Image (cartoon, rainbow, N blue to C red):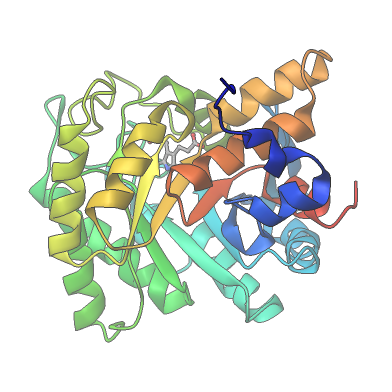
Length: 326
Ligand code: PBG
């Protein structure tokens, strides 16, 4: 009797065949590049835990934007480090705040580049929480008004997409209402619908100076142990009018990316966060891993899981690698 089995290796025998049958491709259009903007002049501070990522003053932003555009990256997401912080995060909704000024500048330099504004208070509050605080509690409803004001101010400055990351309940509804009232009916909301209370944000908090000064974010960000809750969160955001759904972090949450993709028909965005970047950079600098191969494999995994696009600090590197540049 003849041995019966399938020959899966037929479709792996050379590079051309493998290229033909490949199910997931990375393209520079898939990536959103995060940029940290700060006050001052000639500031180009490398974030110690994120080699290759800089806090940039506005005069330094021009070079960065030119590079991003040259690499065919279509979108950036902005985070701001203000000169001063207060209890109510005034810098977030100041029409001349650091993020608003950066948006205006980028839209002048590169009108075609999609500018996404992260909408949160934590970088602007002295306590470092994403909403208003009273007697040690993070208040939900009173924070919504300030978040909506922040989004409107960002849209007024020219932001193409609003990306609220604060995890207050009702933030999409409040921001959608605020934007519509102000005439920004065409500005989409890319909601951080599913955001876990994750240790993978550590390096970002160094970069954005946004570590909470007391407690943690566990009363508003999600418990990493929960998956069904992620679907409830996403469901509310869809009902409230979100246009795109972010899942964050990405690497340890591929199952969540897949479930959100299967359950909802909106575009899904994976956020490849700062801790994921830092780990790979550190291992690569030690010569322990092949950075390029690891990064491409990781990002391919996120797309395979269901992400339509990925926010990643590796965006410029990947765009170069995909063009065969180094
Ligand atoms: C603001 C915000 C955070 C990140 C994006 N927006 C930090 C946090 O929630 O503490 C993290 C991004 C990263 O780690 O790369 N709320």
